[in-house]
Each structure stands twice: as C-alpha cells, then as structure tokens.
Length: 62
Image (tube, rainbow, N blue to C red):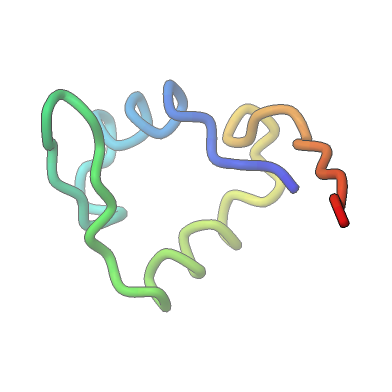
C-alpha cells in the first residue's frame, strides 16, 4: 500500500487549490472532499510518481 506524500500534496494544493476540498487544522491538511472526489483525485495522480511515498509493508499478526 502506498500513501499520498504529504509534502507533494501540500505543494500540489498550493499550486492548484481548486482540485480537492481541504482545510488546514493545526498546520496540517485535513481532506474534506467526498469519497468520490478523493477517489477521482487519487486516480488522476496514479502515474504521478512523486505523489506517493514508499510502499508500506504490512505483516499480519495472529
């Protein structure tokens, strides 16, 4: 699983504030877009390599 890179997201939103509904709370980005809007945003940026951090490795614990 890969997460959106917070630095990339901040820079992208500063340059393109209309692309996703967000609010700033305690100097952090809070995404307020609907699920559909967020999914569309992520899909548009799937091939933007800098948009995502390194893959997270999960281990199932029983």
